[in-house]
Length: 468
Image 1 (cartoon, rainbow, N blue to C red):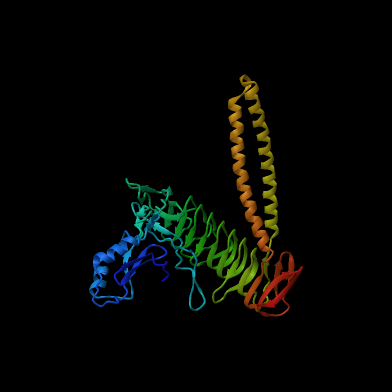
Image 2: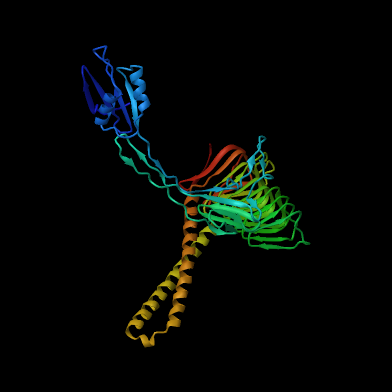
C-alpha cells in the first residue's frame, strides 16, 4: 500500500498522533505511538482534533477511533476514514428475447460425417412476441474523498431507438414486439421481422412454382420441374430432384440434390448440402458438402468437401478461393476437373462492371455540366430558367449516382476476390487419382499416379504437388 507522507503530527504531552492520507485521498489512517508515560491515555477529542487538522473531512469512521482507544491499539496503522468511489453511469443497452447465436453451419459428427439435418438457419417468432427491451443509461452516483472533494460521475451514453420493420413499440418506447409472424434478425441497431414462407411436406407440380420476397422453409422434398425463387434464405428439409432453386442469400439442403442432369442451384450467398449429384451449382459464396458426383459446380469463395466419403468424383468443380476434399477422382480414373483461382467468367464480369462504371460516370459528368449551365441561367436570365427540366436532370443524376455506387461496390468485391484468388490451392487430405485435371490460374496439372495428402499450388508459373 503506497501512502503519502504523513500530513499531520499532533503533539500531545509526551506522544504524538500521526495521520496519513493515501495518495489518491480515498483512505486515511492514524497511528498512535505507545505513550512513554504509561499513565497517559489518548482521549477521543485529542485524536479527533489531529484528524481534523490533517484535513480529513469526509468518511470518518468514529467506531474505529473508539475501538483503537479502547483496545489501546498502538504503533499500527488503523483506517479511520474512507472515501466513497464515484460510480460512473452505465450505457443504455438492449436485452434481446430471441436467439442471436445462429451460425447456419452444420456440425461434424464423431464419425466424421456432417449433420445437415439439424441446421438452425434462422429464429422464428410469432406476432406479439416480445423481441427486445431497452434498459436506459444511468447517470451514476457521486463520490467523495476523505478531504471532502466531490467526485462527479460520468453519465452513461444512451442508445438510439431500434430501426427496422415488422415490429411495434410500447407507449414508453422501451419494449419492442413482433407485429407479424416471421424470421427475426438483429444487427447493430437494426431489428427486422421478415416474412417466412413455410411449406409442410413436399413441393411438387401440384403446389407449383414459388416466387417469394422473404425466406422459404420447406420441410419435405422438392420434385423435378419445380422452380423456387427467394429473396431470402432457402432451407429444404428433404432431398431435391431436377428443380431450379435460386436465393438472394443462402441455401441449405438438409439432405442433398440429385438433379438428374436437369437441376440447377444458384445462390448469392453460401450453399450447403449433404451431397450434390448430376446438378449445376453456382454460389457467390462458399459451397460445403459431403461429396460431389458428376456435377458442374462453381463457387466464388471456397469449396469444402468433408465427411466420410468427402470426395469429388467426375464433373467440373471450380472454387475461386480454393478447394479442399478428402478424395478427388476415383480408382476407375474417371475424368474429374477441379479449378481454382481467377476464372475467365469472373474476369469478364469484372471487365463488364468496370465498363458500366465508366459509362455511368461519364453520364454523371454530363449531368453535372447541364446542371451547371442551368444554375448560371437561373442567375443571369431567370425568366428563361425551366424548373421542370432542371428537376428532371437532378433526378436523373440521383439515379445514376445510385447505379455508380452499386457498380463501385461490385467492382471492389470482385477485385478483392481476384486478388485473393492468386493464392488459391487445392488440398487433398487422402487420395487424388490419375484422370484428374487440376487448373490453377490457367495452369494445368495431371497426376500420373495416385498421390496421398497433397497440396497443389502454383508457384512462379509452375504447378507443384507437395505434402502439407
